[in-house]
Amino acid sequence: MIFMILTKFEKARIIGARALQIAMGAPVIIDISPDIIDPIDIAMIEFENNVIPITIKRNQ
Image (cartoon, rainbow, N blue to C red; front, side, top):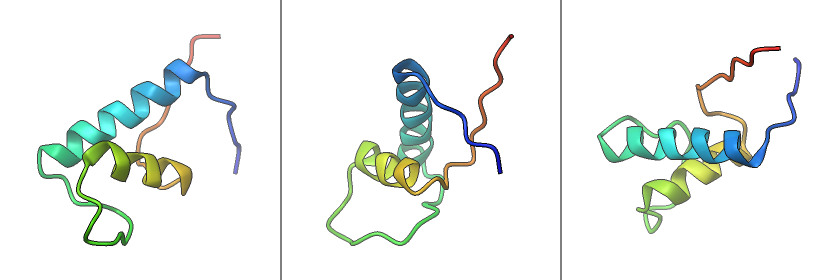
């Protein structure tokens, strides 16, 4: 598996896009406690666990 070093802008874009998906009703990929309801917090937890199904394509 290849790990990319993401810029802060890429990280923000990924978390924001995933939070929007969760807010619009997309299923949450990981098990979280019921008291976490904020889509941004859920997206950040998914990002930290490397389970967000979003890829980055860079022009190099």
